[in-house]
View 1: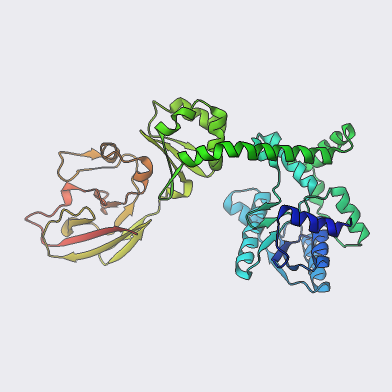
View 2: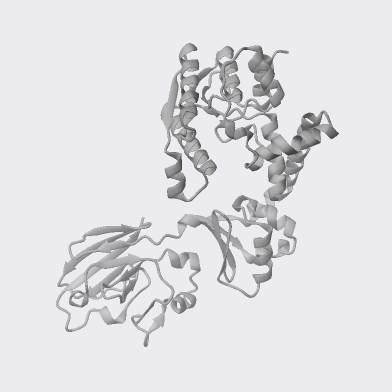
Length: 443
């Protein structure tokens, strides 16, 4: 069976695409992606090419782009090229050049896919990339999920060359006289993946000449084990994790029976990337540290009295909104504030409305999240009270605290915990002549 038939067979076996799908090929100019482009063109699939010029290698980057443009032109394939200022992006976002290039290319690929209505994005990773990923994950510490390596289909991204070894790709580009360019950074062992490919895998092949085939079989076993594990874990996870607003809630009493089983706990929370060390800390803090927050790379988890609350990190925001003497409407997070000035002195018991003595206000007013040390004089209560104590008395969780609008006077005094309590110092009195009415509605 020739390589084109093997490609079609692999696509069908892994359900990567339908024959009529529009495919965006990501082509760098290297032998892997150039072979992929050649095979997809020969197969008659509906394709276009996307090429990223990261402007990292001077003239070599320009020659890569020229090669891909020529291939597209010679084969009548539409091409899209984007030139990125990768170094600036990495510096501004305080990430490595490699991570910057990855974020830039995948963000752009997805934008192209949506705008031009492509069905799939094809990336030319092969079997050796698959193996290197597993070994890299092992060296960094991973569970069964990391031992699955590169998935042939994930979201809208397909990897149709995963069935091919690197040596086979080398053979076919020579067989079909496909022009390509080598990226010299692929031969530098200062990168961990390259070190695995250049220094480590050859030793395995000395021990076992059929290393790639055997390791591929092992990856299949890992994948099957992971699927089997999920069949057990998923029903428990679905029972425990309930969506709530912008996050998830887990009742502590429901999780109690699984708490001491750390391997199971790790799998239950795997979708949020909490490490075993963090979950071990959760076990220790379970009954004695209410209010503690645990973190993964993307999520915060609050251990509250009776529940666990999980939110994406960006959910907690320090953004502020301003109310001037002329403001009529302003938004803060999911809240909308309406402001109006009048001489109407009628007092209301509606918690969504605050009526403030206008002459005591110092504009601009600020709407923000609470801060440690905040205090006010709650209407209807004696003396000063810390907001943290007020929240505890009201049994408001930390995540809820972060989302409560705090309206602050220009002199720093807190005027209103929106939808909860006004400050006693700014209420309407018999001396009040003008009133600022604030109405707070949740979208």
